[in-house]
Image (cartoon, rainbow, N blue to C red; front, top):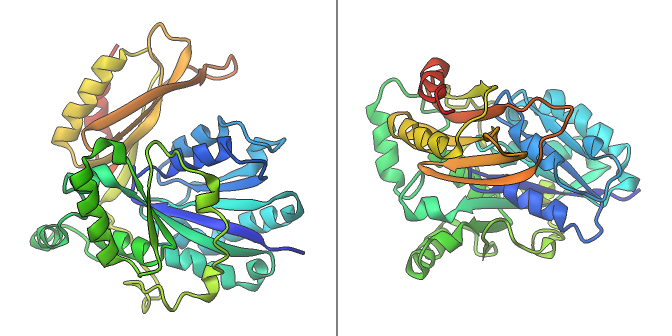
Length: 344
């Protein structure tokens, strides 16, 4: 029996992983694709968004499996194994698999799971794609100045230091077979050249950097590495190679906001920008019930930049409701609710 080639798609929150997978599903070129989504947050926004895509599979609900109880590298001995076993039972009906990790996940522990006998005989890691937000890097966010961010963390005794975001990013780069630099349409050619040159200093010489906008890239570029990554981990160092466990920054949490009444999209976006200016919010995403519109609006935000589009009509069987997930540091649900309640 053939092994299912698995592509692991990793990257920081808001880098564009879900947009990329959505594009791959809509342009699968006849491939029968299984998708495993790992979502950090109680509301599975990414899973819902992917399920709205048209795929070649007759049962998209079975073809998309969402894990919601933490990062894949932490739940890998619990929910991940039975999920993989379920998918492997139908591997003759699949051509490949995509695994989208949480923005807080370390890719290497996930890849190591493919050495387990229960998985090894049925699947192999074809390649690791690390998605990097070019616009964020150009604006000096997250990893543009590691020394400054590290110093800021160390100066605050209330912060956890076990897994800094900088180390997560470095581990994601170290495990990559290809780096996909997104949102390059939002930066200048000079900025792009500087970012690519900097990334080259962080990557193994064999790792290629590919640019894209809105996830628009041929599946042939991302699939078919045949890297068998699980057998080649020694060349992919991690900050956590000598640790039996790792802890996420406990200050990072997710908060959900729900509102039944229709909202004014313009006012909502303005309130969100004001909220981001006051709170340490890394990512906002969800669905919006826009007043006087029959279509559901998808809203995604990183920093003070928000993008939106209408993806499909509201279905008669679902409740028209605004559902947003906020991911950030020490977020308080009451403060967020107070800031957004009056957006009608």
